[in-house]
Image (cartoon, rainbow, N blue to C red):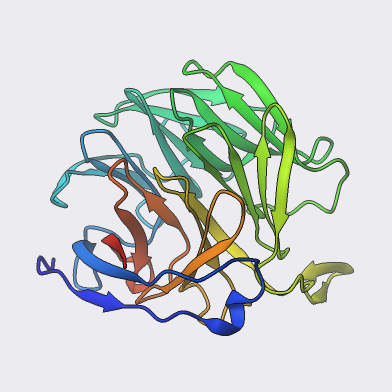
Amino acid sequence: MRRNARIIRTAVAALLAAAVPGGAQTAVRLEEVLSIGGPASEALFQWTGLATDDQGALYVLDAMDFAVKKFDARGRLLNKAGRRGQGPGEFTTPRWLAVDGENVYAVDQSVAGLLVFDRDLVYLKTIPLPGLVEAVEARPGGGLAVVVSAFDAPGRVLFLDPDGRTAGELRYREKREGFLLDTVSLALAPGGAVYLGFLFQDRIERWDLSAGRSWSRSLFGGKASETTNVRGFALPKDTFILDIAVDSLGRVYALGGKQARNRARDVFVLDASGALTAVLTLPQPSHCLHFDSRDFLYVRAEEGTALKKFRLVFD
């Protein structure tokens, strides 16, 4: 594990900046403060999901180890739980994580529900849900927001209380548009706003629970995805938004997919109105973005065998 900080200066992608309304852009620097794992380490094999708690601990889902792992703020492995299987606390396709209060909520793509562990990674229960889970986020103030996919009821975000009871619902899609998993990413702002990023559409949206959709923005000129025919089904070929995240100041970060100049590395920073304020480029491709309570950014590296923690410096 490298302990010395590296400062990576990022360039603004002018061609992409014109796609979203905005004024002068801000330069952003990334300072690496922590690295866990790597090709020569066995700490991580191919991680998929990440969450952090208020004590600075990191919880990571490892898809090749079929386990959830807990690291302290210095990157030391404290515990791990889970194995391959379909029993209580076991995984077949580990995907996402969230931490709320004393509980850790894990998503297995084959399970219509959430696997619940305590902070010591003791399995507690599974919360059943009316569909497969595409994304899960802890809500500011407590509870969870979960994107649930079901063929007969597409486009739903369910808001759950800490015990898993549904406390509200947001419908962002009114009709079926095929049934593909992992097509939507989710982020929650401290004031209650819900942000959605679409994998196969050039679209980021802000929703407010009382007022509905506030705005919709594109980053790549509103381009539609090309399709390919697979066994009689037209499937999208292009990816646009791989993941989104929000920091404590309400800035929205969108990780660009195939349409970005630097695929899976370009991160577009928008303000709460949807205006583009900065573009930064990660040193290696990532599939997700995560901010902790102190606004440190966590991303994937080394093809999933490493996890990087950065400090963002806005000049």
